Image (cartoon, rainbow, N blue to C red):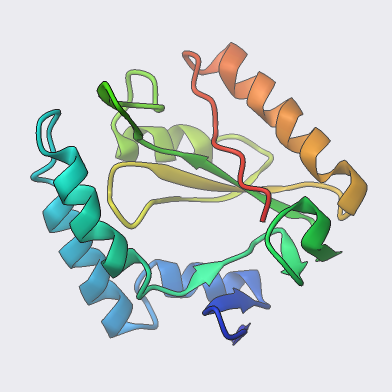
Length: 171
C-alpha cells in the first residue's frame, strides 16, 4: 500500500489508492466521508461559506493522493517522478456570487458514469463531498508534457461535455 510523507500524501500503487477511496479498506475514512457528505447536503447559496468552513477540517483528515507521481514540493516544478496518470477534478465552484456546478446538466453519479465510458479514463469516482467527480486518466509518463495533457483534456471536455472544465491542480 502507498507510503505517506509527513503531509499525509500517499505515493504508490494506484489500485490500492482507489480501493481506499472506495471505502473498501478504511472504516475511518468512510466515516469521515459520510460526515462530509452530510454537511455538503445542507449547502445552499446562502450558507455555503459556513458549510465549507466545517467541511475543510474534515477533508484534511483524509489521506490525499498525488496520482500524477512523486513530488518534492507542491507545483509542477516539484514533480520528480511521473506515474503516467493525471487526476481531473470536476467539482462545485465556490465564488463570491455563490455556487456553480462544473458537471453540466449531470448529477455527480451521472457524470461519473459518463466518464467511466470513456476509453482513456482509468477510474472515476465521486469526490469526498459528494458534489463532484474525479477522473484518473492514463497519459504518457513525461513530466514536461503533464500540463499540455491537462490542457488537451480540458479542451476535450469543454467541447464535448456541456462546457465542463476540470480544475487544474499542479500537484
